Amino acid sequence: MDLENQKRVKELSEQYGPENLVVVLGAAEGEAAGLTAETVTAGDPTYAGPLTGVQLGLKVYHICEEEIKSEVDPGVYDEQVGMMEMVLDVDEIVDEMSAIREQFTKY
Amino acid sequence: MNSVIKGASYILAHTPDMVIHNGTTQTTERIVNPGSEYLVELPGKLRPYDDAMRYAPNQTYIGNLTPDELSAVAAPWYEQKLEDADRFGKMGEIMPQDEFYILMQVCDAFDLVKLEKGFVEEVKPRFEQHPLMDESIIARIKGGVEQSEIDRAIGEDHAEGLYQDGKLVGYVKKSHDVDVNLSAHVILENLVSKASCVLSLLHLTKNTGIDKAEVDLVIECSEEACGDMNQRGGGNMAKAAAEIAGFSSASGADVRAFCAAPVHALIHAAALVASGTYDNVVVAAGGSTAKLGMNGKDHAKKGLPILEDVVGGFATLISKNDGINPELLSAYTGKHTVGSGSSPQAVITALVTDPLDKMGLKITDIDRYSVEMQNPDVTKPAGAGDVPLANYKMIAALGVKRGDLERAQLNDFTTEHGMVGWAPTQGHIPSGVPYLGFAREDILSGKIETCMVIGKGSLFLGRMTNLFDGVSFIIRKNSGETEQTSAVPEEQIKSLIADAMRNLAASLAGEGR
Image (cartoon, rainbow over all chains, first blue to last red):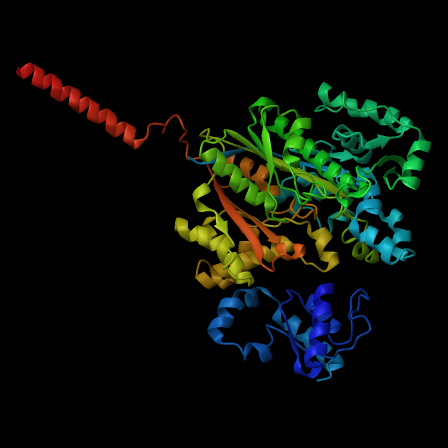
C-alpha cells in the first residue's frame, strides 16, 4: 500500500477514531486487495510504511463486495463499477477480503 | 489532410551495473537498509548481455520477432533463450553497456563524462565499427583518464561512478557546487536519457531513409527534467539529442505528461504536419535509469533474474501524407478530460469509445489496440498482473456494456484485438508506442486496417493533482489521396468555374455586338 495513503489512513483513524472508519478498496486483484486490507488491519506486511506494527483493525471492504454494493445507488454503481465488475475475479476478492476481516478486523 | 507514420525505431541499452548503482529501488535500499540480503545477492541475479539479448521480449522490441510470434513462445519468457537472436533488429538494436558509456560521452557537451584510458582503448574500436556512428560522432570521443583521477572524483568530489562488470571505469561529475539539479546523479540520469534518445534517432534515420536535414522538429517525450535551480524542468532534451544525431535543420521541444507523453507528443506532431506548419516531425524519447530494477526485490525473492536491466528508447517519423503510409487521424483523438472522472469505466469511455462514437464505429471495428504494452514477465511476479491483458479486458467489458459484443466473446476479443506485452517497464516507453513500427508494417501488408494507440499517465506521482490522464489516436490504412491529388480547394475550383463562365459570357457578348 502506498506510503502516503498509509499515513492518511493512520491520521484519519486518530482524528475520527478507528471504530468510525470504513476503508473501501478498488484493487484489481485478490492478492493486492488482501495486502491492502492486511495493512489497515494488522499493519504493513512489507514493513515499509507508517502502519508497520500498527494494528488499526479497521473495517475494510472491496467495492465489489455485496456489503458495499448494496449501499450504492444501482445506477451509479453500474456507471462507475459495472464494467470492472465484469473484468475482476470477484469471488477471489471476496474470499481474500473475508479472510482478512475474520482474522484482523476489531470493529 | 492527415499526416502519416513513415517509420519507427526501437532501441535498448543493456545496463546491468546501472541497475545496482542508479535504479531507485537499489539506491533507496542502500540508504534505508544498507546491509540487506537483496543488495548482497543482487549482482549474482543480473543477466549477462547474451541472456538479455536472447530474451524474446527484447528481440520483439527491436523488431526481430513480431508480437504474434512472441505469443507463440512459451511463458515465462525468461526461461527461454532464443537461438535465432541478434544485437541488431529490423527496427533497432540492443547496445551493450560499455559501448553505451562511450555514447554517453559522445552526448556530453560539457566535459562531464570521464572514462578510464584502458577502457576507452578497448571499447572505442568496437564503437567505431557501429554502422550508424559517423565521423561527427566518432570525433566526439575523448581520450581516457587515469584510474587515480576516477577514484579521486568518486571519493572527493561527489561524482557518480560508471561501472563495467563491477569495476569502476569512469565517472560523471557534478556541474555545480550547490545546485542539486546539476548534481552528478541528475547529470548522469539526463545523459542516459539523451544518449538512448540519440541512438533511437540514428536508427530512425536508417529505418525511414530520411535525409537528416529534412527533419523540421523533434519532440522529446521522456520523463526526465533537465535544467538548473532557476528552471528545474527547463528542458529541450529534444534539441540536445537532435544536435548529436545531426538533424541540422531541426528545432526541438519537449512534451511532459508522465507515461502518456509519447501519445500526447504524437498527437502534437500529427497536428503540426496536418496543418502544414512542418513537413517532418520526429517524436522520440530515451529511457530512464531510475526504473532499472524497479521490481528487482520481487524478482530476486521469486528466484528470477533481474529482468529490468535495459534502458529503452524509441523514435517515430510523422510526415505529410504520401498516399502510402498509414494515416494518423487527427480529427478523431480520444482524451481523458479534467471532468471525465477517474473510474476505469470513465477512463476507457473517454479514451476508447468517445472517439469511436465520433466516427460511428464499434469497439470491434478497430483491428488492434495498442495499450500499455508492459512485459508480463516483469509485472506478474511483482503482483501487478498482466497489464495489457487487463486493459483489453476492460475495453471488451465496455464493449459488452455498449452492446458491441456479447459477453461470451469477451475472451476472444482480448486475443483477436489485443497482443501480449513485450516492452520494458520504463514508464513512457511501453505506453502505446511499442506497436507503432509493427502497426505500420501490418497496415502496409494488409494484415490489419486500423489500430488505436492509447497512452495513460499517473499524474498523482508529481503531487500536483489527483487527476488521471490519458490520450489516444487511431491510425488507418492510407486512403490513397495525397496533397497533390486533392490539392485544389473547393473555393479555387469555384473561382476557376466562375472565371470560365465570365470569359464565356464576355465572348458571347462580344459576338453579339
